[in-house]
Length: 385
Ligand code: SF4
Image 1 (cartoon, rainbow, N blue to C red):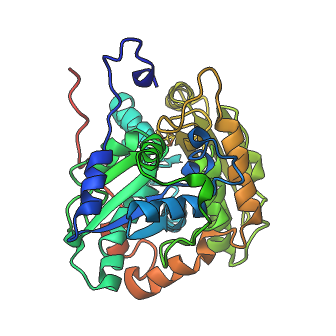
Image 2 (image 1 turned 60 degrees about the vertical axis):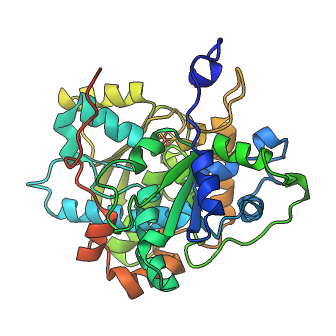
């Protein structure tokens, strides 16, 4: 945030909007865009739109006016992440004597870089599941390219993220598993998309809501809460419970991981086994947790870490309001969207089910491993200057 507050304007915020405008003007390119969960809580703030008006469907209408060919939802791939990460966690639990615990979530690139750089001994405990942004890019350039009957290289894949670290993540050299160049070609922040809308003739107040495109425009309430601290853990536990017992829990059964505290702990019964979890947001808290783990002062089975306090709702790519932090209000919006969603479980997302049936096979299949998982040792941290 200091970049945007540089008093003399010597530091400029990175801006990738030109690359996207160029792709939108290229008749050879099919430009697909994914909208991250937390973006829908914030895109209207700088445009003077009330939260109840600045919906994801109205953002879809604006993006269509800008020329995007297909408007999709990162909530779809958040659900896919849960299928993969939840299955991986259950698989690791089966080998509790040989596996190291806790397993850590891996969807926040700020956290992944932090642990690799400062506590590398924990790197193998990161889930190998890619983040929803990267899973989406890989699926867009493989499964969706197949649906369209085009070569993956024809697809230009854009993400709209609440996050600056996502720009680094999509450029990691190994994030190109679908064979069409980078799986995500450009990651835009919420602020950049607002700038794109402002620089056009679009009048957001005049837009009617429009549906997202199918099939990658469907997401569950479990997917939408990825944007809040505790949301990934809660979504994973909802589906892990189903995968173990064959029955859905009460969707709010794991609500004790909600809330803005920086380090939360909870225990749940999963088919007779007690699972101890922690949810941490903010890298200061992550450092304290890792130190305590290293010293044997605490122990957990599963830990969610988000680099930004409050999770992606308070991400570094979101609109900035001098002296006022909006993360908590945005988190409340996300839980409200989960509450009213007809789908509350990632494993019930019909587009995810169809993607497995028609293309990926099953969670942790060979194809799923190739497209949706990564080796955290396959890329090196940039050298310190
Ligand atoms: Fe990005 Fe912050 Fe979300 Fe991590 S918590 S993915 S750094 S916005």
